[in-house]
Length: 604
Image (cartoon, rainbow, N blue to C red):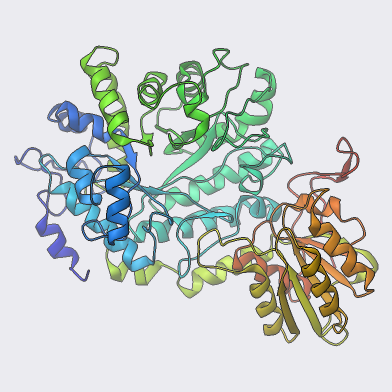
């Protein structure tokens, strides 16, 4: 789609820098920021039908790379799940206030396509009677959760930034990442994660958290909030009231957090307080039960004591509250899909994210107002918050983006270089017995690279062993690559051992090693060859506890290219290891004892 911005603007009912109301005169702005005061926003709300008001509260997924001409498979998926063919029909039928982009929904192929999709969505929405711009969002946390891949700039994730310990780097990553999202038409990012990862067994947060120290996490969260929002993108701290101490994944189960209220205030609350103090635009709820904060057994997403009593009243937050995805098991365990959106609004939520069946959720909210369970005034309160945010982000002034803007901002050399430099400062050297590292080309020129190859978070990077091999080759080593997977078989292990015979050193990428993992067998058999073995934890740094005989161990905290390449520069001595553990690593055989404390990190 090569339509110029001017043509697009002219094609919409609310042309240029305004939002037209019911075909009448356009609203003027308060100032050159494009913000509208509450009085004018309330005037917009007063002209909406009840159906339009209900729609404004929903943020929905939709399949396809285009708002009006998706591929047939995406049309079929939309018809099956939502009863519409494409994003334009979704907007016309339900008047949704927001749309969330996913890689698996085929929304994020490349930056120009994403910009065109965003423009198509805005055009479809503004063409409606009393049409309003759509708030487009995505989960671009960087690290292991990224919906937009190369050629956009991908930064180290939260735990890596926590290891780097630089709030300046965290803020820079947020500012650049935010600027690139905005250039593609995405103005709400579900980042940064504000959960404090105090449980090594946490299956859903882990390296998505900045670390285990509440104050350190709070500092990094505030820095990222300021970074994203300085770029004109709404940051979203998640998952309130804190998802860091759980062994259950809320996508598939209903976690219970047993912290006392005092523990919550000390461990979980500080990052959210810091986000609010930094002026956070939105906060996402968690589908977890915290009996000390609400003994009813309801998930926090549906808890008035937690969302209104604590978040709004005690912490003084008046921004947008968005639910985590309503398709997740944690919020569906106790109530049906028809009750969840109504209960969430009664609890104090403003945006209802990605319900499994939009018709059920939308109609249940509509009926709750018609039946008197919810008042229209309650809806207006949330819509006002959403419209304030849209106004602040400049959507009411100009919701469109340009291809030229994409080319000027997305994945430019200065951004990629910043990501490389930041990643270098996060790599952590955990073990270096006998000074094996840095590896020298003179003594260890030929290197066998083996290990796990998990799928790329963004679908555009990796596989990790290939990236590691290419990075070594670039630095003058001779690399041989053999992917051995997360659960290597006996045959694969034998192949790796045979390949190790003719090399000077072995680099193995480890991924979530457990006591029963055959990755342990692989590493121990490689060690038995007598070849020097360097291990790199490509996700959780806790792997090191399971492999005590490895003489050199680094942590990269993610398997995106930027982190893996930086780790290779560190192990080859092209960069100094300066990262420090932001979480403690417990002993494998005595989990109550700490093997490496927070702050551990060796130097050359």
